[in-house]
Length: 318
Image (cartoon, rainbow, N blue to C red):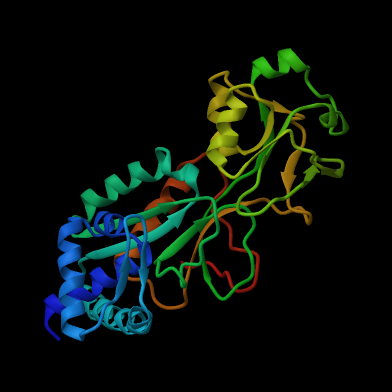
């Protein structure tokens, strides 16, 4: 099959995945007009219309739905060939596509990806920053970064870094509302709850001497970790935050730990972990290199080294 035909299939598959010519063009580093021409050329070649187009929506026709799995198969074969050649040459090239929590898009990953791009000039990166859980296999991503507690699944786990969670509030909020001196005293305060990827109303506290389960009755609920963090900084209320996010603000005097002797864990006492998940199979050099760079960032934090993932089906990759 001609290489330009494969380019047309890549344009078609990306528009189908993004549901937008503009978003697909941005993802591929091309102009929307070039993607339109590529899809039109493919439609002329196969003799059917592949997309329904309107002013604000793009959707697959029945023919497009039937062609899409075949397009993915051809693109997968192309990627496998590229990866075999990369293995021979020792060079990393192609696209890396991933999802990550929204907060990582605020400085942390963009800086790392910039460094990665300088080190691997033939690799392009397509990142999706959202607190919603995305299945990398279904979304045709190389991996998805997640925080919290690893869940058992068919996906393979790549540990990045472990961390701890505590309660934090701004000095202004605590001056205004008082500092709670016990977990029970939190009931009288404005609590901020993170609702993505799921709502966890039970906060499990552990100190050196006891474990307490507390049902949080939030004053504010946000589906964005960044919004929770910013709300705590703004003096809106008390929030549960990762120490690697909040402790720099404590050192700067913008946040304080609340009930500092208590750490928040899972119901079984486990600490959370940043980790990536990916479908079974060997990771291409370009993907492995980026994950190792992200892990290096985690190890540079003043934290314990990344630990093996706990749940079955999420074994760490060396």
